[in-house]
Length: 168
Image (cartoon, rainbow, N blue to C red):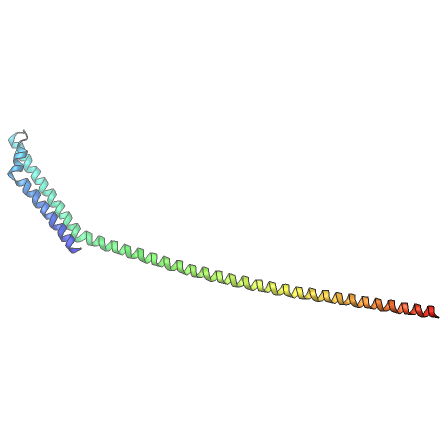
């Protein structure tokens, strides 16, 4: 990082020096002098242009130097802070999501257990009802058998009585 900023500064310095040398070279003045204008205003205009260009170049160099030495590190620190804040926010969001998933899973397991318990109660209740129904059926069947047996006994007794009566 330090080497990059140093290289950038050196290149900017080379550019500024090259521009300054070009403006002050006799070839530069000759190219400009080919322009057909009165010599006095031409000389004055060239001098003003050179001063403006020199001032602009110095201001640009100063801005670049300030940006490289002060603004860029501050921007990097600020950007690093923003990235750290974003990372912390994302980490917190991920933690919340994991916690929510765990709660949802726990709720799902509790619901499953509740459903299982409820089904077990229902099955037990059905089993009791089935047992009661079987007992009732058995009781009815027993009562019917007893009644039928009693009728059969009565019929036999009646038949025996008739036979005795007939035999007499």
